[in-house]
Length: 426
Image 1: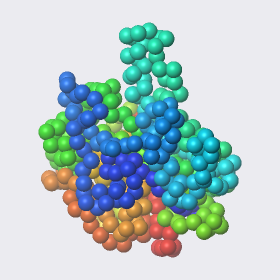
Image 2: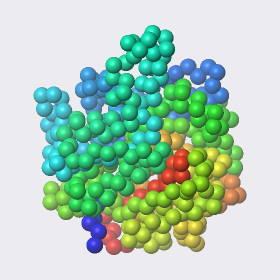
Image 3: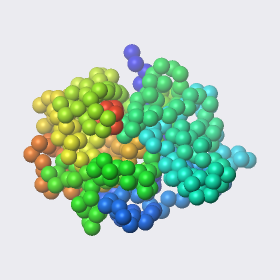
Image 4: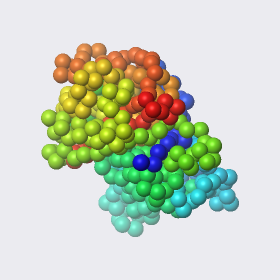
């Protein structure tokens, strides 16, 4: 029998709010976090909009001196991890170094963080220094700030966790795959507690330019940013890039119960697959993603009809949305038409690896709050996308189990399943 894994804490930095309460309120209100890019001058760019994290002050969660040694994606992850550990009651008193060691067995506490791209703003700044002023003027901490594993590394150092500290890099599926790896660490008995989720911060000229050259980003509605991300709508023209971090505290059920922790949900299952098809496009048959969904449901011990809400990858691109609709139909059969499906990327944008953690948190909030987050801007449904995508307004109802899927460049597919802890068995 598989060891039960539960969620005891959550933390978030996002375009919809920098704490769980604000984020949840924004979801329910159908609020858009998309606006004109403020972090750099977009002159010469076709794309001038993004879902930026606003009013982020890293000093609220970490020492200012330490924050200056971190790229933005790492700051997001540390801030979200601090919130999540506090929520779980696992954060200790700050020591003389300003660090806050976890108040559980540090050797049996792990970290698994998903990241896709790393500290690209550091790469850009150091390249500029290199070419303009020579190698001796580069940022001294260029390498440790830019590499994707530094989010996990800094979380481990700040909170003094001494179990495994891993980084999952599977593009836009990385946050979801990180949660799956964390699930396996606890089930295997290697860890009692794992800090896990995803983080990303790539709203910079280099990445916007790169995605723009791929024709992946929305350009038609830069004059009305809040309407640009429109998954499953016939008038969509690409995704809106976002940024942020969603971090969950995962524990074995026995560990959580032994310390009398509040259990937010059960992390019931994870599934993954590879399309083996194309470097940027999903397999148009939907088979690859459907296999990941099937694997996650099987791993959870549930049946397809037990899933009442599916948080779709739902990027708002021409290729993704009808293909993902096929995936859902293949995996769920006739139940696909009875369940609720929505893409919260319509509100918080596509946060790349950060999306997996953010959307997992969305599922847990939906279960606990009894609401289905909307897909906003769904005004003219694509005929190929014919499921119930909760158009434009939040709907309410009991949810016992929810799933979230993430698809990444390279054909990576990851799906997680959460269920109401008090509702066992369904």
